[in-house]
Length: 619
Image (cartoon, rainbow, N blue to C red; front, side, top):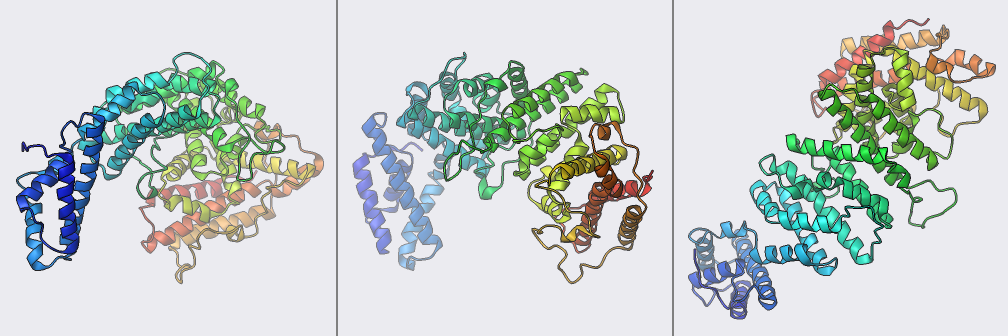
């Protein structure tokens, strides 16, 4: 509808009279058609000379005032706070706006004044308040559209800024290796740009393959420049922000810090986005091969009391970000190679060794780490979500290595331990860190995060095929524990099993506290009794199994060996008993229809693990 433009100041004065009339509960002096035209032109920002600085400011003021009045009218009518005689004229104003004038089509359009101002800032403004304001406003707009899943409008907004944002990223990201000294204004602008890149990349998932814009692919297209900035930038905070962005892109956890009600943005990626992640992973691995890790400095952790130089470990969030970026890159690299029928396992091993060497150089554990598989537990023990992501990435790395090497048995496990990707070691270390408490595993299973469930099911499928490897990993942990106990008392030692693990630690939730908690299915109860009886029998008649080459690498004195003969199956017993208790409580919850999803496949896998334990020979 083509309407004449209204002078800005007079329009605001007339709308102010309407606003006061509404607050006073009376009819406006102007006719309904005149008020509707004022509101329509105000929402559209129709003021003379709006391309000038003064006109743009007037347009913003008019838009804000018109939307405020429109909202007040809607609220007054819906709440029935207006008298019957007064309600009619205000209702007629809304009818004119939403029917013949079609105001909703204007509300869903990109405001031309805002768009022009942002495009100009992205194209020509140096780092500073003007550019920062435009970056922030666009980020907030895209963020809200993502939360409300407005795909059409989201695509329109992103497309309108694609060229200017691409030019801005090319200007701010270095193409060659030069020292980048960030001033305070550059730092603020760059961090706001990283926030915008995150929401733009997330918009690529929402919009789908139909909209494949360059600005939605900056972390992949400009990945080399981002990694170069990490190496050359003198600002530690900026380095950390870049690595956290790359981590979220690779893990597909974009927007986990700001999504609606704290729920991270999980969406299925299409073919183009997967290709972008593979490009990013390849760029990371090329940088690692060029000694990128050696140029990466990690500061000491910072707390509310400041930073101490003595006895304080390196920044854990930085270490976890770097490690997850590299682990996920190796996983994607091997998947791409497998699809092409190429063996890249030797390259993957060299990347992992570079990571472990870098961590040793930083003295992350402040003690000697003789078993590379321990790095996952050491790095991610305090962050459950990152721990599950690391374990989930390590498992397919190991499976790719086993498939390509053609080896089997302990040879593969030895090589996996040397590379730090033995899935049995990772799972045993996870159980030990949880004190073999099945209730914590249950918390992971029923949480909104699905990463642990996916990892757990995939690992159990492999465990039933390689029971001997799991038993060897448990025996290895026994030898290590006893060797530590012989030298000095370990700080995180696990107490021995005493009939049940239900008394170990503090449960997050008492899932067995209902009156019907003792009710079980007959088959599950019988299998649990068989497992418990077998554990008791093995504890009373224990004979040490022949040590594998993995175990023989540990040097244990005769005294420790004598204790080992008493407790060789301790870790194995506790691990299986933990899984058995988990199966029982999940079965009870399923019977009462209290479990959030169908756990039948999971219960079947847990039962198969118990069967493997019951069938395994003692000697």
